[in-house]
Length: 356
Ligand code: ADP
Ligand code: MG
Image 1 (cartoon, rainbow, N blue to C red):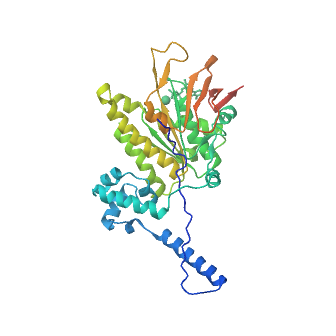
Image 2 (image 1 turned 30 degrees about the horizontal axis):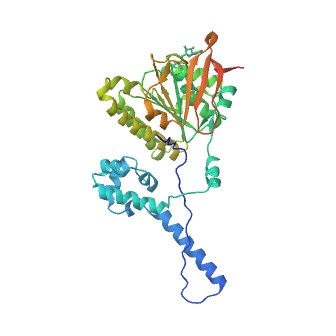
Image 3 (image 1 turned 180 degrees about the vertical axis):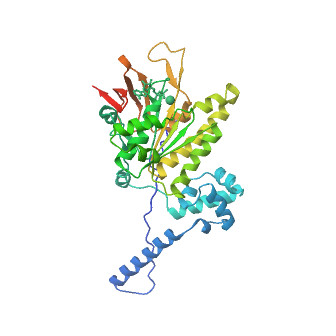
């Protein structure tokens, strides 16, 4: 199966010039006419609202807005099923809305240079460890999902706490969202790490929004609510942590018969997270567990949970394990533009310490 990474959807906003000059006019006039037509077209596309879409009146727009579809882009990248669920519209009208939103945004191909320019907006959140940052090409990227998988005690939660603190080091207005499924978020640990990073612990804690997820449905709902924190509450969310991504799904869907249902839900969840990361240029960090593969005789007999769904949705995958003398080993096993590699560090009170 081809691997799809949601790092850069293809959006082309270039306005095509379409000018018909009826009477003969000088070259200068033609140019001016072209310019004004271009401007009005640009303004028109800027002005198009959700209510201008076919079949969307004020009531439907409101229904859409309550579930986060409050601009053309969010509708353009939605699936018909999502819009049907949100509005109760027929499949045909949901498709029409999507097509109209897409054509207005003029989504299409863009040049490699444009993509590069967009990638310049990506920032990287430091792990506090030089070797770990180097492994990750400078830190944990915004606009992408990074997954750490590993056994109990390998350091997955520690990294979540570190990202929540370190995103604020680079940008004091940055907010971290922590979706805690295993009751392992510890403000005391944040205080230690904030002191280690030279930040004001109280301020750091204020900029972390924590929610405990009680089951997989609740977890999915909380992930969808992050959009509101950004759009409605105006928070500068820079990192969204889901620790653990998989625990509820694993506990609730037991047995072979339920696997496809679990994967469908997980797929939807990952889709929401990918979109959140890309549309808001924020870093999504998820933790995953491992299962043992008793039939594997060579190499490491452990594998991450979640199958292809999680594997395909994560832009970066890191395998964490315990090393010698209480150290940790991080192995980058999948990344679109970085070489696979390993690094060693220790988890200490004030943060991570490099081990060369
Ligand atoms: P996981 O989430 O992968 O199960 P954790 O991230 O909770 O694992 O890692 C727990 C480990 O982190 C502990 O066993 C310990 O080695 C280390 N750790 C946690 N808190 C501290 C601290 N305050 N000082 C030093 N090491 C710590
Ligand atoms: Mg943990």
